[in-house]
Image 1 (cartoon, rainbow, N blue to C red):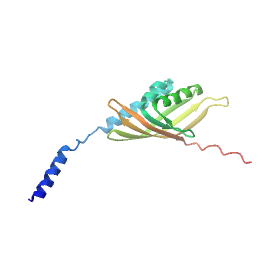
Image 2 (image 1 turned 180 degrees about the horizontal axis):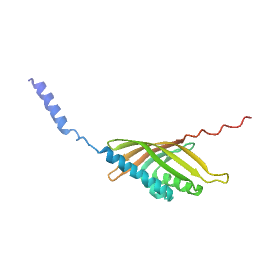
Image 3 (image 1 turned 45 degrees about the vertical axis):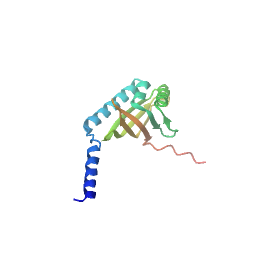
Image 4 (image 1 turned 60 degrees about the vertical axis):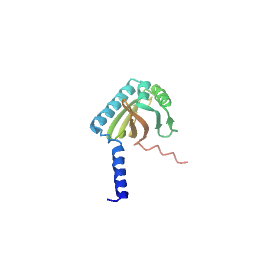
Length: 158
């Protein structure tokens, strides 16, 4: 074996020895943990606990509601939820698919919204997509976007 080949083999051995260990995770347990966080989210919505909801989001989270500018940061997301309590609405999140890869997860789900009004109950439903990140102690939402399955009303002809 030439000196060059020995040096290359030694370098490969060193690189292999220094490579970070593969972090094997139990994706079923991670999915269950995220489902538990979503259950807590639904309970916090029912009890109008915007502080608990905000705690599900990362400090640097971004929320992208339909027909509104993006909302950045846990405190602003908390304010968004707190402003909604006056509507006396009911929101339920139902995760459909949770894909976990290492410290990241994508949650695809459905939501339903009902709200009383003088003309009768208003109902809406749609889908959402969230990016979750593992922390030292839990999972947090870092991106949240949703939209309605109901088409917007068609403007009246002029």
